[in-house]
Length: 240
Ligand code: ADP
Ligand code: MG
Image 1 (cartoon, rainbow, N blue to C red):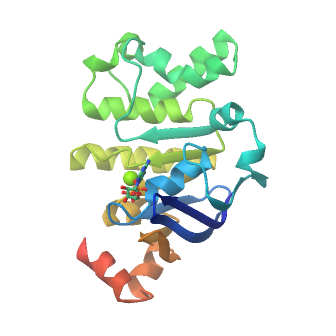
Image 2 (image 1 turned 90 degrees about the vertical axis):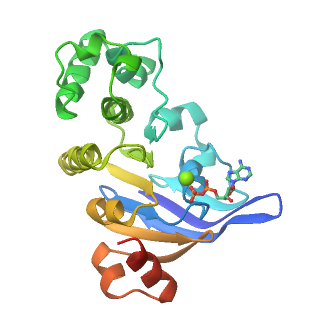
């Protein structure tokens, strides 16, 4: 469970997150959607403490993130972003193994987990585990980024526009892989995108962010059929 309670954040005199409260349940696929600059990444990054809150609290599994050791917190939460950030001098297998290695999993277990993820994420070029990131396609790099985020079986995964730079077909195929893995493992996912179609395809519930506030939270159907106000129907209608 991820809970935001009366969270506020400003940069300079600009209010970026404005008294926001939200509860994301265990096993839920929650998508934050909204235009660029609405505060989505800032909110997501509060969960792994890449952004400190000014006021209010963020709790993970009932514990205030500020009360946890920051390294322990981050190792327990998967994180995948658009600019992948794979380690260029490490092989695909070593990139995927990053967190299990930090957690000192035995070698054998790491190898099995890497093979399993290569399989799950359909990284099926023979010998891909031994290759370096620069030799992969953009879609394959994103798959490795997702595999790395999932490697240590975190209960929570944060994803910030992870498929943003991909062509539509590659993107759809990755969305399907991710959704299947999430369903099978019961992982709680907080996913950020500015793309309404992506949000509606993935989400159990969607939160529409506008100007640092949640304009509406609900299932995709709720937002489509019962938009709370004109701003919501404009955003939902405008990008479809
Ligand atoms: P989104 O992810 O929805 O596009 P962000 O959370 O990245 O939005 O940013 C929200 C607002 O906060 C933007 O106006 C952005 O310029 C500003 N912002 C984000 N991070 C910083 C920062 N580190 N310093 C100053 N302003 C920031
Ligand atoms: Mg962002």
